[in-house]
Structure formats: C-alpha cells, structure tokens
Length: 190
Image (tube, rainbow, N blue to C red; front, side, top):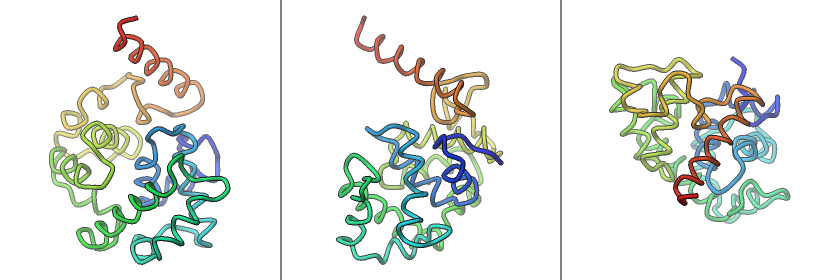
C-alpha cells in the first residue's frame, strides 16, 4: 500500500504498516498542517530509536521525557506538551482496552457504528475526526465493516475530496485544501 498523507516516502511507509502511527498522525491533525501531523509519527519513531511505535512503551514513558521528545526541534506539533499527553493517554487506552494493539480498534469492530464508537472513545477523536478516520480506513485500507459509509457520513462518499481520507497524492491534497477553504468561506458567509 502506498499512502501520501505525510507527502514523505519514509513517513508514509510507516503509516502504511503501523496502525499506532496512523492513529497518532490523525490525532495530531489538528491546528497543524496535515503533512506535518502525519509525518510526526515517523519523527517520533526516529527519536525513540524504534522501527514501529509501541503503545505500551508510549503509555509507560516518563511524561516529561515524552514532552521533550515532542518538543524537538522540530516540534512534532504546534502544542507539543498537550499533544504528548494526548498521545500518551491514547496509548494507555489502547493498552487497557485493545491489548496494546492499535489495529484491534478497527479489526475488532463488527460494524461501522461500533468502529465509530471505538474511535470516539480515543482521546482527541471527536465525532468529526472519528468519521474522517472511518472514511480513511474504508477508502484507503479496505476496512469496511457493515455500515462503514453511514458511520463516516459525507466523508465516506465516493468521489469526494473533503478530508485526509481522500488524499492520494499532491493533486488530491490540493483539491482537499480547496474544498476546506471554500467551506470556511461559506461558513463565514463570504
């Protein structure tokens, strides 16, 4: 599988094989450029000296040390302290509720509604982010439990360019950005 979320070959390769990295990228995709958010799990893995991220390792990390790792330079997010805490909280929840295996969040879901509920239980995953992630899983990873499109809402529709779920390269990224810009303008009434 070839992803283009980070727009960086090595970072995208990690996202394609590491479910925790993918969740962390989505978690960081808030008030931060998408490419940097999805590239940050790769930088985190490099700084921790690992090939793949481990929920138990992140859950047990010293919080101050994790903030230092997130701070960089470069910082892994615009708000490295709060995002380090959020990643650690999500990692703890994955250890406690999903046997430490991030993929179980979706592989263990029997329906789109259950998948959506599981994602909404993760720190930093509100309703919209969870719906986008359901769409990302369905569109780019083939994770399609019954009702996944309904759970994803408009983000699950074919042929749309609304979110990260629809980014398959530089051109689609530009189209998604244009959609978001137009939506913001419409919301402002201009």
